[in-house]
Image (cartoon, rainbow, N blue to C red; front, side, top):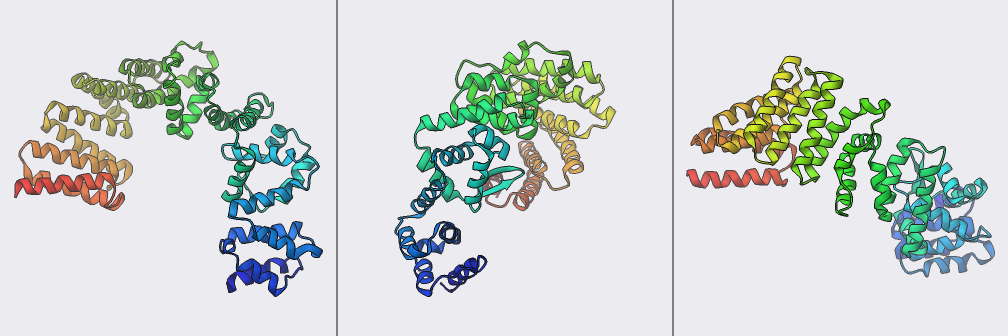
Length: 432
């Protein structure tokens, strides 16, 4: 209580104001005031909107609110009273609330179509509830954000109307940069369930490459949502007319698409076709002895793993290995040996699998450091291979190596650590 009393005193002191002891005690003894953010918001509201003649009654009104969101809804009433048109507050706060991660001041003014003066007034009234991150204005208070949604955005039609206003500006605004479109539009299309617009937007090499470079999982989620609609197909990329100036973007596009679609597209032949297109563009723009060509061979190999054609996969991984060893490309070499080991493991050729796992572990140590998660997985798989060969001593040694790294990096409760631990327990019981 004493800390809260000091907070009230210091807050009003900054503005050369002072509350009576009774007023301070009523505020600080209220249960909601236990939350410092709520207490600060209450003090700020009383400072801005409180009137000396009725100050005690105004305190009582605010303390009578049931719960934080009810109190913050009361604050919104006060903020609306500043403007002749209450919709100004509703419109501005709604578009900020429904944006992905906030809007710039220019975007707020253009989307809401208000005079800059009104935005200046509102931002001053709500300075406590806004924060600006990298130029984007968003809510600093989750309670205020929820109050805005409950007050203005309960109706789906209202939400869609504001989202449509945001998308229209992002689509047509002359000052909206390409990167900004890529960051905001897919999110809004998803929320609106405007699958046609989402499909047309992501069906662009530049958009694909931008989103993939920033967050592959986001692009995977977008395409997974589209594929669930049954009317959209990833191989439509292959039917696009290629402009000469975008040719150089094809290689990174096909590289990214191979990795992405292998995880979300069940049709292995579509993935294989993308991988072959990646190989074609890599040979055209980078030549045989290049990282890109080696990576494309790895992509093709992964497709054959998915179809359980392990010997065919090994053929392509070996092509990648030859190129990587010639040009000293360790990352793709590490991947190729790891994939090859998995193939030999699946074929039951455990000695060759161990040989490839060991090479991959050595390379991963060079790339990621001696102790890393991937090495731990390969130590575990190597242990399984030795177990299948009947060499229990080496199997136990490699299981221990895997477990120690996983426990150190992932923690003892992580799924991989737990799985290795259980395997070791079963192993010990069987070999006791």
